Length: 174
Image (cartoon, rainbow, N blue to C red; front, side):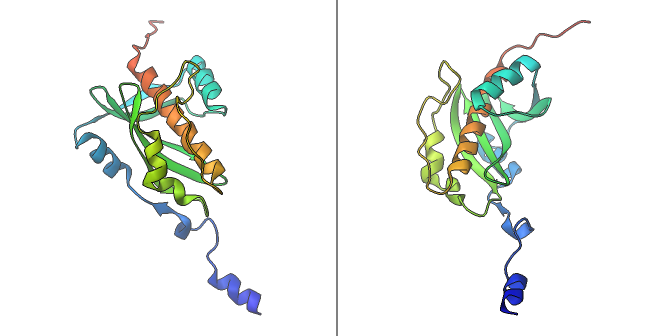
């Protein structure tokens, strides 16, 4: 009987109560660009997909990714699975470096420390090395290994896509 009562009182994983929306995409973009930006798309070609997947050491789905830009600055809102559920994060890239990063929505039951300023600050100034990996070590968080890994993969992806979006695309006339 006590077990039944506890089951009724305890929140069920996966329900809306487990979702922690820290910042909306609109607020993130307003902060990143002071309100002045335009939307654009980077196409994920098969050769670029291979490059992304190799650098991130994981698969990447989708044919295109929407991003926002103003001049040299671009903003990327990406999603990766932490342990079991998606983490939504935003990254602002300028001059091939991460200028700003934020966890926008956290859905896991543990590991939410990745949203704290001390962890997030590690990404500021990060860029890609010659092997398309982050050029700096990102300290982990005990109990949040998979969430930290998801953030590192999203940071890497944002830098790669910013680089790709700045490259003139060849248009086929066929």
